[in-house]
Length: 99
Image (cartoon, rainbow, N blue to C red; front, side, top):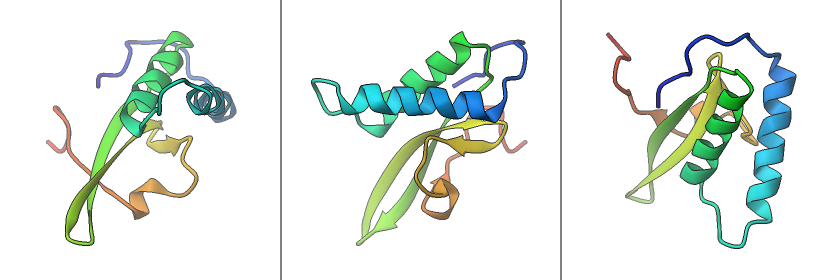
């Protein structure tokens, strides 16, 4: 997903606070909120506060089955993740990356 144009940089602590708020709301939602809708909601909330962020999707093999996960990065750092996501998943390249 594309990053919002412009906008002042916001301290990482602010992005982390927004990530905690989105996680709390998702945990109290009527339906289970999986990683992709959570990530999209977090990215939109961050964009609303002028924070440039991107949704990343990664994959890994788990017992012979392909597993996927979505997360949000701000300034190249995954936010709202309990442990380093890059150690668990290989990020897929999006449009405009890796060139």
